[in-house]
Length: 464
Image (cartoon, rainbow, N blue to C red; front, side, top):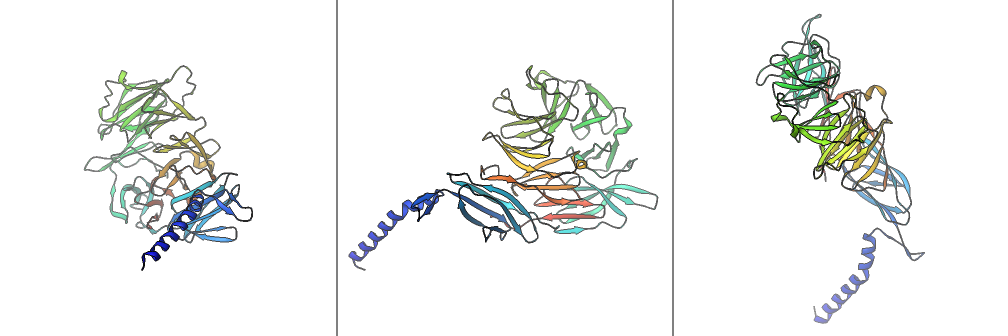
């Protein structure tokens, strides 16, 4: 190849690069060319990635298959459905603003399997009562036509493991199907039935019947493997000793009691004060202390205390507190600069820098603490009977918010890291119906039970 020929090739390449570069930049910024009008048009760009791949999206007489990316004109609004065989359909309303480039980016979306991966049945004489944790199910074993006992059945990713362990000092009353609150270290509390179920370290399972005490307890937290701290309907605090079944008075005048695993702390609401105690160093004989004060609300504090209306969760560089129907954020850097996130909150959950809540109209919302923005996540079509207790749990691997009731699981995709202003409508989908489910995913597995079967829903497809 002669030097002249090489020079010609280089010159042509340089000219092509110089001419095409502005067009490439314009396209990367989201514009389209209108050759007839000889101008640039704003666009709405939609990008969708799903696990598994191969989901279909019908749009304007075309059908796109994920992973996919397509464009349309600005100011366009449409409902987008993402469908895949053997998975539930997710739906969004997408709308681009006029005269600006808009982006809707749906990434890392794990689709919801419509059927369980497998179902396992217990023995004929065993009925599944409640799912306690990723490790245990409460079961009832029929010994004869007139006699039965309750036991603990171990479970794992593969289903049932080993034989049930009969509970010592068995329940005196029938157990209704319902949730148990995990107090950690194999201690569980059933508010509805008034039982505390616990395992003596390295030994048997035992049960404590709270109805044998004159107090009615509305909140309980674990101090250690032996002691619990509880609050009754009068606002009094008591310690419960699991070894002796004895209770001891601690203090009075409280409106709320809660706990967090990270940080490992006990939170209390008394008057206009929020108190914090490290769980491992809590001493009921030296409480409250001046160092317990975490935050003092000023004289304008207008929350009316109601029992069981207080809960705490750690969030991005701070704490979130639900007090009655109000939700507050207190940043670590300056917890005196409190912020009321919402004034109509029935249930809430949090993940990193996003707080989720359900209001009295059963509408879902998300508040991003970094961007100081609120986004509506749609309407939850839920029956009144399912509103007694709801848990909002966000799973990062699935990029989904899960809404758990005692008999249903709802879910919707949501990305708290990217500001999807072009997604203007979210539609929670009913994933699991008429089953009692564990209120978390375990290694991409959703465990659910009914009296005669354990069902495991799973999406273990390889993500992007």
